[in-house]
Length: 94
Image 1 (cartoon, rainbow, N blue to C red):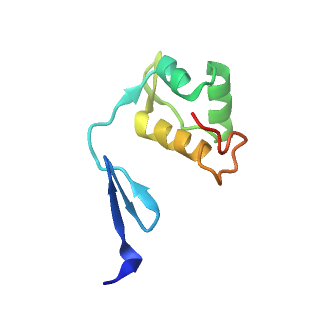
Image 2 (cartoon, rainbow, N blue to C red):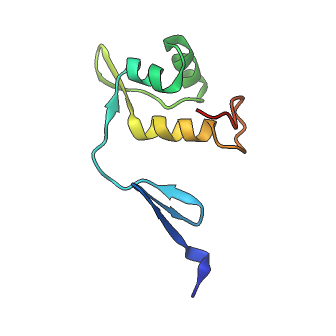
């Protein structure tokens, strides 16, 4: 058996050779208050990090409607809190 291509099934995800993939499905869009609640940052910090390329970009649904893709926010949270991350908050538990 070739072990170089091991697949581990987790609820809603699959890991292939250490890369996590999320299956295609309904994409949920989050408005700013929910993003702020999930990540623990204020509006100004979110937009500052977006401009620096350190936070997922929002999408515009109109002149006064910005949304974020839930999977991108979840991936950012996972990256920030993984033990070998270079982020200042690395290794902290939620």
